[in-house]
Length: 157
Image (cartoon, rainbow, N blue to C red; front, side, top):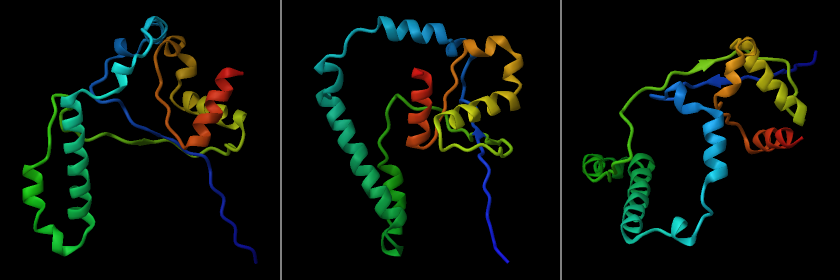
């Protein structure tokens, strides 16, 4: 008797929080990208305020890991840590993201074409293949590094 395990390729949809369809226009994205100014050193080097904020966020992250995973001896600092959490104006409202698992497919993702088949399967499952204007809107895809590299290669082909 031989035991085997077979896994199908699967995907999960996560709706974008507070997104509007008009903000996901492919032509607007392409235009913005093509008309963007070249990066300068000032675009990537932190200002003094950004350096200070970045450092405080890093310190908080380290302390959070220590309190959360450092054992019972550190758990007593949770209340103080919560009070010390740094904030910025760039935050979204607290919400719970919905997850929508899709069925599994018998698709071999080990090739460039296999990864493209996954995208086709997602579009078919959502009936986007029947909505011509769906191609006019951005789709955000995530996956492991190899899958994303294969999708980029497929796009170049």
